[in-house]
Amino acid sequence: MDLNKATMIFVTFWIMLPVLDLVLFSKADAIAQSRSVRVDCVRAHEQCLAKYICSTKYRTMRQCVAGRASNFSMLAEPEAQDECRNAIESMKQSPLYDCKCRRGMKKEKNCLRIFWSIYQSLQANDLLEDSPYEPVNSRLSDIFRLAPIISGEAAFTKDNNCLNAAKACNLNDTCKKYRSFYISPCTSRVSTTEVCNKRKCHKALRQFFDKVPAKHSYGMLYCSCPSGDHSACSERRRQTIVPACSYEDKEKPNCLSLQASCKTNYICRSRLADFLSNCQPEARSISGCLKENYADCLLAYSGLIGTVMTPNYLRAPGISVSPWCDCSNSGNGKAECDKFTELFTNNRCLRNAIQAFGNGTDVGVWQPQPPIMSTPPDPYTPQRGRDRTSNTLDDPSHTNELDSNADHLYSFCGSLQDPQLNDPSRFNAISRSSTSAACLMDWTVLLLSLVSILGHLTASQTL
Image 1 (cartoon, rainbow, N blue to C red):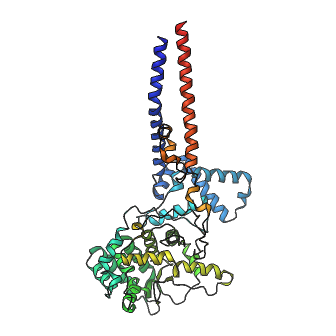
Image 2: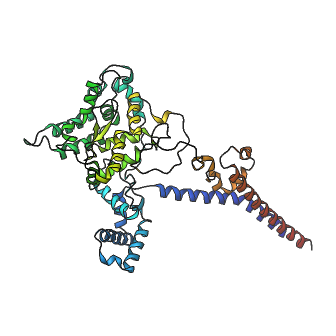
Image 3: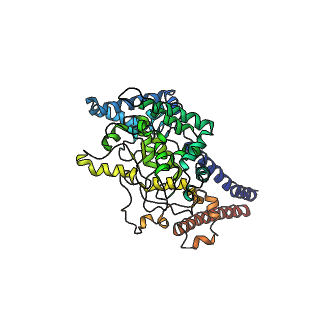
């Protein structure tokens, strides 16, 4: 009887072990998915205020930030510092910590205000600010396939493709509606000294690029001009945003001063951070972009239009853009100012993205390249002069990341017969093999223990 019980226990254990492994893996996967579900900052703020502990910690954190900005003397007390530190750590466990905003959402400014208040408290990185906007999940790369249709195969014809794009906009109700919304305030003179109401013009331009489908708004903003005669076509493209109102001003400010002014406004600061993040150039990338995504770069650039940092095309050969500023009177900040302006005037990622739209090609249809393992550089530092020699840190074969099967004890041990694990050219072959050996040893010890137990039970039954 005891032998039969032992046999049943052994069989049950053998069957249940992989089942338990699958259950634990499913729970871990569910937890990971729940953490990846991100709410916007307005909703996260409401959820936090509805809970007493989160609400209390959030208010404490806000007071700490305000006190730190004003050099409040009470923050020098150890107890106050501990309370601030605890509040900040508590916020890292709340939905506010990882919240984002959606461009053009109903309460966008309020959402961005909440994001930057949290970011200032928990990140405090002035050099490379994160984009507050959620990644766009729609297939924006489709616009590249539509570009030649809209612009009439721009690269190979002598048509004024920017004029064709304007005509296509007038045939679309949404595009025509929002275009008229910004043309009116951007062309209406307010007084003898003011050519327009710039604030209303900027707001209407932001609505145009936020509301109008990309295939129409991009057709006007990124239309390609024939290689021969650029004058009429490129000037119409430059006039798309009515630069006399939205772009030009009586005097050109210093670019660093304009950047500082931009950061005092939640929308401008957010759109600039989005641009610096998604249009970051990378010399070693075939696309010229660190993130290898032209659509995200074009979306980020268009988001700047309608802010004090509004860029526009320069009257120069080729594709060159710039905000309405220069680096005169920069003093000791001349080098920093030049690096900032080059992110517009000499940005390989942005230039390639605009050209790709006109040609109807996207980086997404190219042959996939090995991922760039380098840390994102300072946003003001162009990547033209970076050393291209190979580095072992950039070699993906040196990564320590385990195969996804390593999370699965049962399935991982079942994959030991895979002959590819013995191929030294495979990524992580050594680490996988060593882990597999350890896993096999664990199973062997477990089986020997069960056999020993069965042997003792059998001997006792015989006696």
